[in-house]
Structures are given as structure tokens and as C-alpha cells.
Image 1 (cartoon, each protein chain N blue to C red):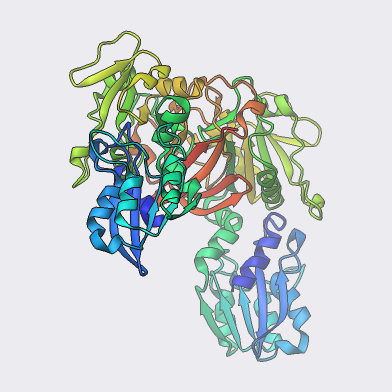
Image 2 (cartoon, rainbow over the protein chains, first blue to last red):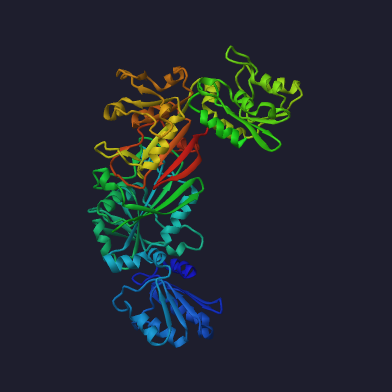
Length: 317
Length: 317
């Protein structure tokens, strides 16, 4: 399932509104097929993996990060039917599909065909890997990641507004990898006017994965090639966007936090003190220390050159 | 030498103006004596370790974090003479003593008596363990540690000034341990008036190690039991203080940083966002990003409950 989850991440940011699923087919202890949802949503992961496995799928085990779909469409047959036709013996699923067109029907169809099914293996990791699809299903909006690049004292720029660069090249390369896993990136008017950022993915082999560019502004017109929303809540209306990355600046970050629309924090922190610079955040609507605790849980921490990257998830009860 | 360095840390904060030395005596692969500079400076580490070893010191190896002294005083004989009289065969030293009364004379006296000497083992760690003594010798001032307890966005309090508590109980216990390793703690007038902090060590068994309390203020009188300095540079005049801990607030921290008087940063960071709170620092005299890089090197990082402690050392060329 770990391998299937890694495959699902390859598809993240390119399959909305379809889930980014990963699938691995194992026969006699060997991987005979691997698949992940293709850009735009088709073929599905199971179809791709079964095509690679061919006859070797017979009596094999399929590991899938999401319950195989039970609904046919003009674009292809249901994956549960494909797995039955291929003759697999066992299907291991990380997460039941909340989409009402499937939601248990895929598993039931497999079981009715005599296939052994197991559910819940790697469920927590699968929730992270397919967070955008799940946020759309559960909340009707994209999964929102806020990126901050700060000094040790929480500044995102000097008092004069200089911000290039606080963090080092390893952090900036990682941030570009993160961009490639989002359908859209959003900045506020201040960042747009100060930097006119390209917001593209400048990593060899991933240049074609640059996300859509969104401006948060109630008034300013969006430049050519940009889209605009007037308030954080409007991310829900961005069709085809299941993952959105908020890149700055402080007012924009604070607006999303104040609306409690941030699900994940990426904090790149450089070993420098700036002192009296631009703070990462303004008011986010929390006035007492009783309010601030218990909202964020660390999910990853890694060294990037001399910087530290920490990833936090919003704790929602 | 690792054991000797650990012993030297026991004495840190209690021996000024004497160095906090550690000593271990090993005979036939067994530790037969252990010593560390006692409060007030006497007995020295070697004298304590030799007293424990007794006859077993003959032909043994002594590991000492600092070159044994060559100067007698009314309070006791020179340690190099004690080692010669005890009949040790070998003396391993981490660091040559910069005190002009010794500065190589201790090693020379040992060698003249036919004792094998080795210098430089664990030198870097010894520089850290005896940082206060070395700062006094080299710079004529104490070693200065700045403590910051911040949120992820670099705030030390809410907009209303609430700061108890941002960090958790594990961080606060560690901060009390740090207090016990300093001869003095300093705060500014704002912190004094807002909190009237006790600045004592509230750890079982270490209650007697509460440091002297210093107020940084050009005007305000010091409360009973406190001392006062008017500017960061005046730490040099605090007799008997080789290690000083700066505990707050932002103006005081910034004044020490602006004077480039901070040698070590302790940053306790809690997994919370405050937003629009009190920033850890004000202006510290660095105006461009070119100025801020390369000044701080990470020396330790550890998890304390849900908080992260990072320790940085000032890089001085």
C-alpha cells in the first residue's frame, strides 16, 4: 500500500475533480502492474495497472488507495468490473470512496463476485495523499495549504520589504515541488504588485505542471493569464481545483487563517534573525492564548540545507 | 573526555571567575576519580578527582577539560603540582588555559616531570562547556545567551500582551535548568513591570541555584534583591558573572542583538499561530538580507513535548 500511496502522489494536483488514486498489483510476491490516475482523471489507476499486468493479474492481489469505482461513464467502465473481469483474487483498499456513486458499492460488487476485500489499510496516509478530493467531498471546497518562508523571529521580509531570499535553494526547490502538486496557487494584491510572481514550477521535468494562478483581491483586476477571487471563501467556486497553495503575503495568509480555511501549513525557516521586519501574519481572529493551542499538529519535519521545513495539519474535531 | 565535559557542566554558573572544569582519572580502564570545580572555585576539579582516587592515581591517566593550573594561591596548590605528586602517568587536556598565569606553563611543568601530555581532545565541546570563562578571557565580558519562547509566527505574546503560556511545561522546565547554569538572568523594564518575574530555579534539587537578577534600564530603580545596568555593554562590569541569560522582552533582546552581544540563542517554539501579536524582536540594526545570513549556526535541536527547542551559536570569524 505504501507503493500505491506513492503513486497516488504523482497524480496529485492534476486529476481534479477526480481523486488521485494509486494502484499496485502483486502476483506471487512480485509487482506486476502499477497505475495512477492520469491527468484529467482517465484512465483510472486500476485500469492502468491492470493493462500493465495483463494475464498476470489473474489470482493476484490489487492494492488501491481508494475503493474501486462502481459507476460506469462514457469515458470508461467501472473499475470494480475491470478487477472482476481480470480475475484478481483479493483487493486491499485504504479508504472507502465517499462519492455517493460508489460509497461501498464497489466493495460490495467485488465481494459478490467472490473476491476477498480488505479495507482500512493505510487509511490515515491515504487521507493525506488524497486530501483535495476528500475536502471537496466533505466540505465542498479545495484542500488549502499555506506556505510561509520565515526567519527564526517570524519575519517574511525586512522592514524595507526585501524577501529574496530568506530561505536557501533547497527550500525553494522543495516549494516548487509543492507547487506541482496543486492545481492552483493564490497570492494577494500586495505580492502581485511587489513581485509580479510567475508562480511556475521551475524543476527539470516538471515544467509542464505549473498551476493556475489566482489573485485574491476585492477590486484589482487580474493580469492576463490570472483568475481572481474576492474573498477566501470563493476558493470553493474554483472548478477543477482540489488543492490550492497560498503563497503570500501576510494579509492574504491572515485572511485565510481568520476564515479557518487553512488545512495544512508549510513553514520553511531559515537560521537568521531579521528583527523589526514584516511579520508573517497579521490578526487572524484569535485573541487569547486559550484560543491558539491545540489547532496544529506536526506531520513532518525535515532539514533542507540550513533551513528547517515543518509541515503542520489543522486539527479538526 | 566526554565524562569530564559532563562533569564540567555541573559546575557551570557557579564558579566565576574560575573556569568550570571537569576531571576524570582512569586506571586500568576503570574510573577511579571524578571531580568538578566546586562552587566559588575551590577545590579545583583535579584536586577533587585526585582526592577520590587516592593511591589509585599512581600511573593512571587524568582527563581534564582545561589545562591544569600552574599558579599556587592561598586557597590551594597548583593542580599541575598535585598531578605530579600523585604520580599520574598521562594527562589528556581538551583546551589550553588562556589565563596568562598558566597558558602552557601547566603542560610544560607536567612534561618536565616526565608525564605524557596530550592536548586538543574534545576541544570544540570544551569551548562550549566553558564558554563563560573563555568569553571573559577573550572578550572581557560574560557569555550571553538569549532565550526566546515563540509561536510558529514569531510572537512572544498576544496583541494584548498575554504570554503565559505559549510554550508547554517541558519547555519551561528546560528553561529553568538553563537558569541554573547561569550566574545571572537579565530582563528589561517592561518585563519587570508586567510580570515582576521571580527568575528563580523551580526544579527539585536545584532550588539553591537561582541566579542573580539584573534589570536593564537607564532610569528605573532596581527592586530589592535586584541589580541594574543601564546598557547591554555594562554586563562586562558584573563581577562574578561569566554566563548571563537574557529572558525578555523584545526591546531588551533587540538591544543585546543590536550590540552584537549575544553568543547563543535558545528558541523554544510552540506549535501555535498567534497572528498580529507581539513580535519577538524589534530593530536589531540589520537592514538588508545580505546582512542577516551566516550569523547563526545550529548546535542542537530537540523535541520538548509538543515544542521544539533549537540552540544556535553566533558565528564569529
